[in-house]
Amino acid sequence: METVLSLKNVSKNIKGRPIIKNISFEVKRGQIYGFLGPNGAGKTMTLRMIVGLIRPSSGSIEICGVNTRKDFVRAMSNVGCIIENPELYEYLTGRDNLELLRKMEPDIPQSRIEDVVELVGLTLRINDKVGTYSLGMKQRLGIAQALMKGPELLILDEPTNGLDPAGIKEFRSLVKSLSKDQGMTIFVSSHLLSEIQMICDEVAIILHGKIIKTSKVIDLTIDQKITWQVTNVQKAMKLLLDDFGIEAVKETEETLSAFTDDFRLTAINSAMMSSDIGLKYVFKKQKSLEDLFMELTGGETIG
Ligand SMILES: Nc1ncnc2c1ncn2[C@@H]1O[C@H](COP(=O)(O)OP(=O)(O)O)[C@@H](O)[C@H]1O
Ligand SMILES: [Mg+2]
Image 1 (cartoon, rainbow, N blue to C red):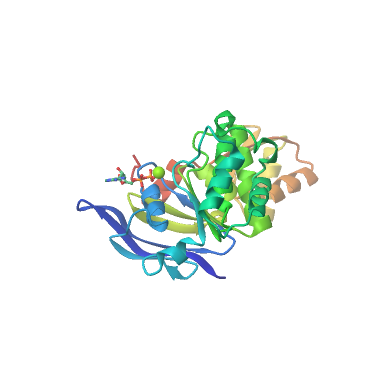
Image 2: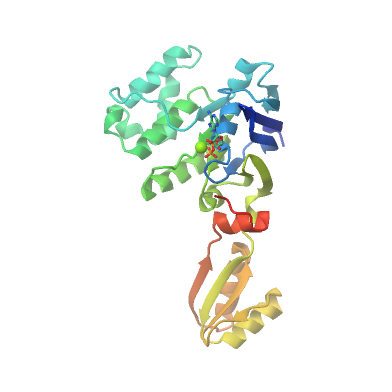
């Protein structure tokens, strides 16, 4: 698979203080790649280096095979981004904001505006002033701006910050459809493990300016603690052991718990039901970012 974004041994020192420490990772075409880390870990600083707002102290960054230091303009022609907040004129309509951008980039055809507006689902409100938009709509207009030049790579910095639950849900489906229907590569930062789990294929985890893990997201979500409330705990425990090789723990007269992943959970639940084990309740304890960092760092706190 083709590499769209690659960082090799990138470091950044500010006033002699190391902020980003020798980080490397690769994003392949079509991936939704997550950049996960607590506040202050160095996500925004890294994104600012990727899009050329600041220079790395050392290391190299390539976008679609083009080194950002050697040929900045060509490297950036492949990137659309929103770092921190989209830049919008509130007193203009959504369409005028896009029109302004098009005038600055003469290669973009007029028809592109209609295309991006449709992609982000703003058709009905595009002629209204941006000042009347919800935060979620502003976010979508920001994404429309980033998509204007038809980039290979879309970079978003904590895009759901401040959005309400409905806005977050819309954002998730937009990102997924850009990836699935448009084949876009998306690099998205977040401090929320659950968010990364919901939208990303792969993730790089940053802590104190260092990448402490890169992983397929599916491999991060294994071993969640599941609790089942059933009519026959003994039978359920036997089924888990015999059919799935999982040793469950009896918690109460009616409940048992075990560690498993989502994929097997579905199979386990259907197996219980077809073995006449009455399934009253299933509870999944989501691993938090804190739990994950505890595992990865052996107890170092993230604060
Ligand atoms: N302009 C700057 N000068 C010096 N230090 C900075 C500057 N911007 C950010 N930092 C520091 O760099 C670290 C990473 O910040 P940042 O990339 O904004 O983290 P994140 O986006 O993951 O929350 C923090 O310790 C922050 O205090
Ligand atoms: Mg940040």
